[in-house]
Image 1 (tube, rainbow, N blue to C red):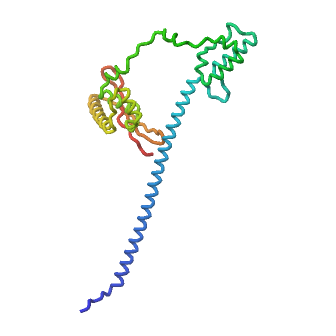
Image 2 (cartoon, helix red, strand yellow; image 1 turned 180 degrees about the vertical axis):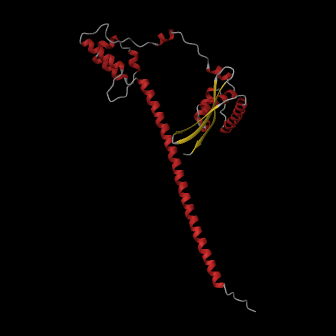
Image 3 (cartoon, rainbow, N blue to C red; image 1 turned 135 degrees about the horizontal axis):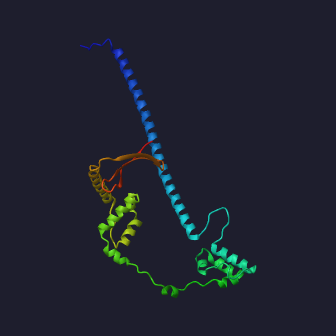
Length: 280
């Protein structure tokens, strides 16, 4: 016997089509949202890369400024829009002009030959003085010889091997830990070959701890400091807390500190309770 056909079959088919159309529209909407999310993730990654590059450029420029300041101090130059000369050359030229004008003698500026030899590119200056200002160059006192330097009393300095023999591995680890924490150095510094060679060379073969060991030391130190601070604050009757928000290198931070007065000697104590990065 053939099955009976339902009278509502066309309506059911129509409902199924509507449901399929609705699901298809929802899937397209979800796919479009996923594409937008992927684009935003790509833009975020690009911004992170740009921030990293900016930080590298800032670090490079800071190092260049430091090198330039060191160069200025070493060479005694003044950066300006005017042409400058080394002080030794200026004194020599002034002395030559005074001699030519008949103003030589005790009032003439003194020039140290050693200072001339310490300046950059002094060979041309020396030849110029010998050719054009022979009288001035003959009056310049000669450079001190090695015999004169040997006659000076040499200060006593401890031998490096003595320091190496007294340095233990635990002492080296503690010094590296304090250097990383107090100077806010990057943890990746421990993996740099030059830094490892430096520590091994000056410590007599002592090794540099790995990053995992450093992280474990930081966690242990944090827990110990937190426990000690908790015990201390339990004995304090009144405290003053401060909060501050600041921005550095396009990054925002939130910090909180605590202050109190010691009851015995009335000395002010301060500690940092938290420092977290925030998004503004």
